[in-house]
Image (cartoon, rainbow, N blue to C red):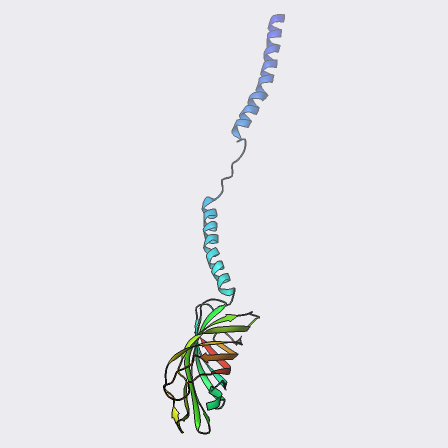
Length: 234
């Protein structure tokens, strides 16, 4: 064998040995992906988000129901029992006595209530008698609220029809019954027993304007009520 043929065979062998691993590595690398992309399960994520969003309003509603006093926009009816003290000229025609009042309330806000009062009573003193009656409306404002205890002040206007049986020309006669305007003011405290029942103490001054008379003395005076109150809310 000549030297040229031997050198050619050696060069061919070296070339084959050099290119064979390169091709095999390229083939191996081409069969495997460079990296794997993990696709999220979008349906599950959308379902989880929709479930979470549907639960949020329910949670907010529960928190709103459980937070704060539940006393706005409700009505109440009740009564008051206590002493009525006649003052001024009213006290000359009758004596103080235990009386009863009727009440209606409406909670306009968390701090202010509308309180309507209706009352009527006769007070006798020997041969004279004093009759007081009225329908009043007041704004009741809480001063502070501590737990279920709430002191308050109130004031307002009303209609009154006071009438007195007093001496006129040597004999006792009833005065003319006329409706007059008047003011009222006072204060008290409420104790809320539960969501339906409230008890309290009320002191309220009623001051009707003077009722003019054609014969006899004019009817003028005022009276103070100190009452234990009870209210049913609905």
